[in-house]
Amino acid sequence: MKNVTLFHRKILSAILLFLSITQGSYAIDQTNNLISLSVNQSEIGELYEMLSRENRVNILLASGVEGEVSVNLYDISVKDAIYAIASAAGLAVERIKNGYLIIQRGEVGKTVAGGMKELRTYKVQYSDPIKVLDILEAHLSQYGKIDLLEDRKLIVIEDLPEFLDRIEGLLEELDRARGQILIEAKIFTINLSSTERFGIDWSKTFSAGGGEGNFGVETLGSQLTDLAIGAVAGPPGLFFNYVSDNIEIQLNLLSRMGRLRALATPSLLALEHQEAEVLIGERTGYLVTTTINQVTTETVEFLESGVILRVTPYIDRLGRIMMDIHPEVSNTTLNDGIPSLSTTEVNTQLLVEDGQTIFIGGLIRNDITSAHQGVPFLEDIPFLGYLFVTDDDFVRSTETIVMIKPQIIHAGNISKITVHQEKVDRFGESSKQQSDEIDGFFKDKFLFSKPE
Image 1: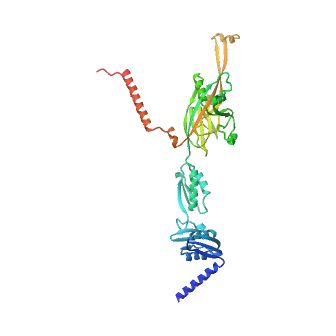
Image 2: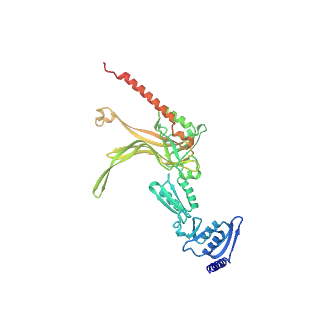
Image 3: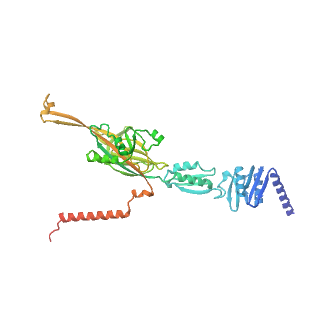
């Protein structure tokens, strides 16, 4: 009797299944193990039951999974059909041992650990992890979750494998190591003659002998428009970009005449997008008094002066270098505790090729010096003392020039910032030998042993 009842139930299920797909079609390609399926308004449970029976695949439906679905699928695998039907019905599929579990999308990850999602961790090394988190969060799927362990710069992401692969590629771009730029700078001051009130005419130097150079006072807007190498933005002055040895010849000539003085020749190794600074001078302290609610406090603040060079480099996708440059030559004085800063400086942006030297000139400074000469006692005679006195004002004009050569550091030129161990050892041995010779000289000449 039980067998008859079971047989009747199977017949009833087959009839219901047949009625559910009478408005569609179902076909199996036995050669390639592909199926084609076309149904209209079929019950989701009955459709999965048909796939399970016909293909001997374990498919489980979680509680609450119901509704109707219409699909047209052609020549796809059974696995792809299971996922496609779930997607069309607004459901999700999680992989279980030897089968599939159909669940509501809101239950993803709660039923089966490691079902349809994967869990990965990423270490943020060079970028701000909070900013990276905000960017990656916008590229998660509707199932994805992301968390940040800020103190360790560790990002934990749980999402679909294809979304994780895309996020991983994006993270590689966001967290790429910043380039390093070696910046070699030379800062000189030149004493100007009486005929050079407006500075030295450097254009003749650059154009002589077939040299190449650009000069002018263009703005950043025109620089970005035409991308002319050497175009600059900033305050008035002469800005040059040169590919000629003429400038070296003229600087050597000025040095022999005693008109050229080197203020500083620093070399900086700067990270991309990070400011590097060289200060050769002093920090002058002064008192600042603050009164709040009848409470007075005094703090000491410092004013930097001397030879200062600030550079912020950037590398574009063509391998060129954009630099924010701020050279400054300044002097600080204190009058009754109030600081006064006298400065010659420029703020500019330059777009140059890797390894190209940039010349910045036209920074003119005039210093006035008063001189008083007089005959003692006679200069103090009333009404006649001026006959024995001479007062003169001397104007000393100088021009500050800056030469900057940026180079991108890579495997091919790493030797520019490293020294081989053999050279270090030779230098140490040579220094020790010279030190021993100097010590021996002083011992022989100036140290005497006591008589026995």
